[in-house]
Length: 243
Image 1 (cartoon, rainbow, N blue to C red):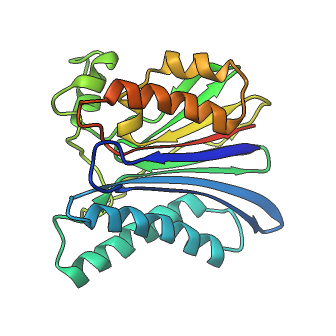
Image 2: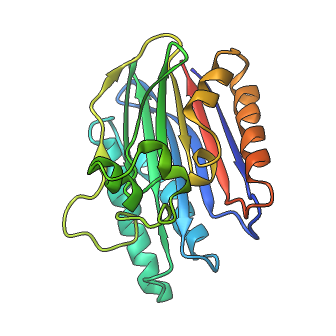
Image 3: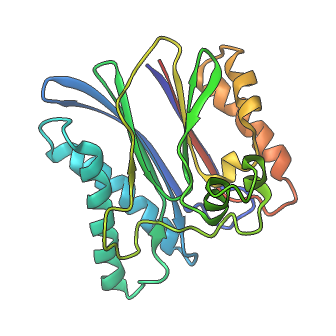
């Protein structure tokens, strides 16, 4: 597997996105975890929340002895750690984050997410699927009131229905079914500052160039930076994992 991580502050004063690519051995299996979090709340608190989500991922991997339930443990640990820090700093309304986590192990991929940071899967350099945002525009799409392509420019696109850092009365994360991997499969995890400024068709076009993971993400980021120039471009972060 080839992977690469790229992040850009955009037009903001600080970067509240956090991401990492982590390799581990669990139960005799080689495991790769890609994780990305987009902090919310401003004044540095979103940055804290997203960093806590990444650290929670590392902590769970260090403590785990198998891959069983690992995605659920990561998200629940991140949620617990963020809620605890909120209380310590009296920042209940200002320390929240999205999260999307990809697990690759034993020729199988599985993922989980909360919020509007996305995971895209491509097969044979064609768009295969993506996670569904926990946002008002996505809800409108699912109810048939809005077309999919309108999400990117919808005025309520930043209004999220689920995030880490809100108290939950039930499970709020989405967990995928396992997917058997094929040679050439590619996954992109990205924050909204990234996917709002590049289309799936453009991603596919670049993936077909069959360049390195680094070159591939840099070409995509070039489109994001150009399209967002002069438009208060948000922090934009992406992780590419390619089989």
